[in-house]
Image 1 (spheres, rainbow, N blue to C red):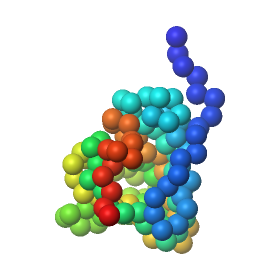
Image 2 (image 1 turned 90 degrees about the horizontal axis):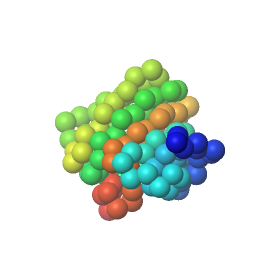
Image 3 (image 1 turned 180 degrees about the horizontal axis):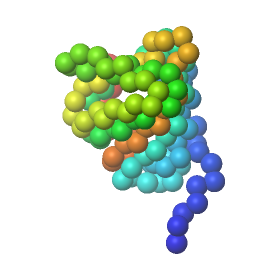
Image 4 (image 1 turned 90 degrees about the vertical axis):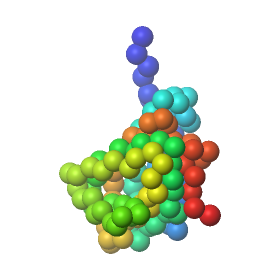
Length: 120
């Protein structure tokens, strides 16, 4: 039988400014370890610590621009574009433009504080 998800759970964010994270599917809201699906809304000027995650992260930008720093440079992912951050690669996300960004993030396996490995 399919499982209906009535509403997301608001997850606390990392970074220098508050960011809204609504997890629809994942370890918290649906007790799903295989994948997480979250709707993110981050303000302009938001930046989070770098990370070396134990998951692949697939991100689709719905509005604004998401900056993805990596060891080889910087990618600016704009509305209608997507990016894949691969397991074991260092990345840092930010939304430097005034309007911030809105995006969907899908992580496999599901995101957890134990498997994200943020910079100290």
